[in-house]
Length: 45
Image 1: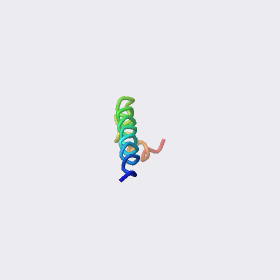
Image 2: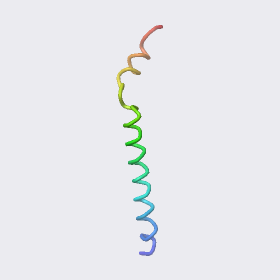
Image 3: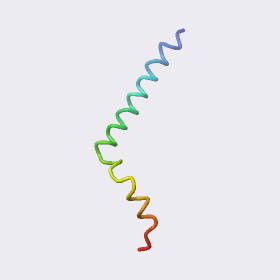
Image 4: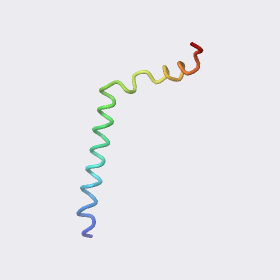
């Protein structure tokens, strides 16, 4: 039972870090052009 005292805050902290990283990636435009990279790889420039 004493392990839960350590594991629950660690799990919540890691979840919060993941959520912050996901929101940061949304705000910086990482998901704006999902099809562009797939089409650029097929172009013969």
